[in-house]
Image 1 (cartoon, rainbow, N blue to C red):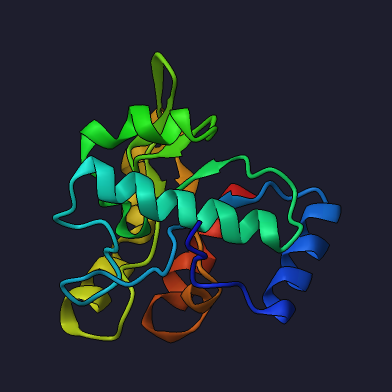
Image 2 (cartoon, helix red, strand yellow):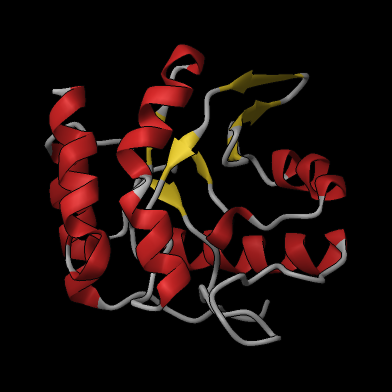
Length: 167
């Protein structure tokens, strides 16, 4: 069986610390890099290739001795709809779809707020609207999706404002 990209030991250690502190862990793609550039790893892929990459990510996860993941979140929430059955067959109980969380046979609608990423004009505009997005989407039960780097750069202040209103 072909091995995946591997997980750095310090990263695995941090994940184990977070899990011990009670945080659920999700797999977030295999490499977080798309074939067409950027971070949308599964952009333009068919469901078979998506399932193969998700399997590789799961193998890396298991090889690192990490606990069973709570779910799967594709980078940039870019995932062909036809991929859900294959991801569930791999054993993922939940898949994050940005506007909600899919489970076998059901989808719970709850949009995720996230920074755009990067420092360009579109990212800056998006990030500045996060507090407004939170107010508009709150009736739908918003979730916050963060990468460690989301708390630096242009989106930091907006994301801090959103997080402060949720506490």
